[in-house]
Image (cartoon, rainbow, N blue to C red; front, side):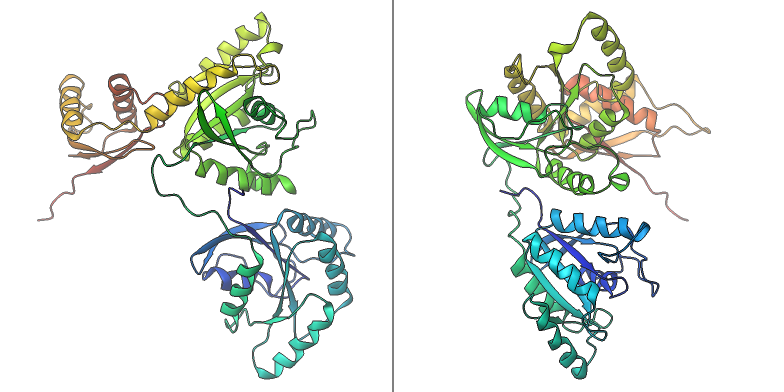
Length: 440
């Protein structure tokens, strides 16, 4: 079962109106549109909704299979988009008709095996509809006449697009229904698939020393520690999404979606290698998404005494902001200490779902303010007047104050909350609402 919205790749020759059509489908001006061919160079993704169904639209650069140089690289990206997509929207300029480039693209699309919807764009009136009918000869089925500029036929086109796309999984708004959802994330080749195979007791994911074997998230129901869990093995996050190329872009896109759907994200780190900026950024991505991170230092069988010494220093220096996250040392290939993962997951989930009653919270805040008042700044001293926990999973608090609290003081409040109430393994978000001054 896919864990992310289906992906629609929009392809076609330069200047046939792909970005204009994408904007029409989204109902907003999101894609850059100019009369100059080739304005869209990279693959750009957008979240779209039609008739209650969500899907991801990927706008690509103009595709000419015979291109050379820079245009050739744009064509490569479009071809990769087709391979990573669930369906393809092929846009043709009906006023120009079929070109040799269009026919070459069609041959590639037919070889891809993906469902293809043919959009005959720039059909602004009845006369142009006759020109659109000529596109039947491309062999892609019925051309869908549409005017991206004026919106003519766009609704009918979207209905056909939805028919071509697989159903996205229904949103689950219920709490604690079904198995806990755990995403396995990390850089390429840190052992995510090895861990999933160890947990499942079978070869469920392809494991290879070549980084990047996993592209799409893989779901697996696993019986582990006497319970059923839903583990999601994701592609390695190699670099920032906007800098990623080719299939890495789509892997990152789907991995972020997997994190959003999960409750806990197990961040695997290769303990035998120095802690990298990518590792810390992935942990931050999980925490910023409001998911509970468990940090698993994998390949512990390759760690010697000297490496342990330096790793302790790296953790102390690089993970100071997530000291609250549970950490375990494992060797996924051999199964060493993998059983400790269950306890770490339970710790993270318990902290993620902890709720502090309003009365207890305000008694705590009263003691805190009395013992450690906010510093006086400019002759003024803001105070916390009242607080409430607005939600759990993750825990979020709203503080009503007499003035704006400094970020350093908010971090102090968070530390004390953690000390008194736990929240182990979970990010804690604190918002403040300073009292508005009455105008006289």
